[in-house]
Image 1 (cartoon, rainbow, N blue to C red):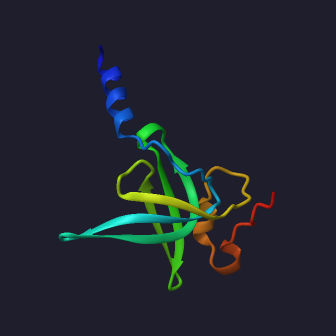
Image 2 (cartoon, rainbow, N blue to C red):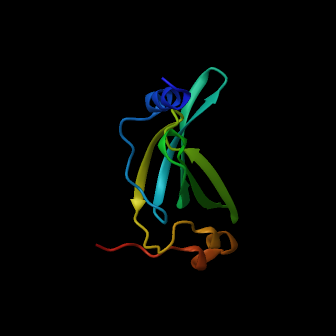
Length: 117
């Protein structure tokens, strides 16, 4: 058994069984675990998914929201035990994989059209 096979086994053990289906451009609520001393609580971070990158257990996604007029971005590992769940609020209609252009926009210009099926 070579090193790459051993790494694959370790990575497969760290992956979550079920991951909610979401795409770039979707507005999501990320329920993240926050540990403060001995106490543990869930904090919700709601925003637009700017990008998804990586694969397997290394996959991450970046969520951006406006907080008091200031843009806040947070990158979450998809298979992290600190991510309780990802809930899709609304689907976005986008034509590219990474929405970096939203960083320079504020207000109505920073919105993504909703996907209507």
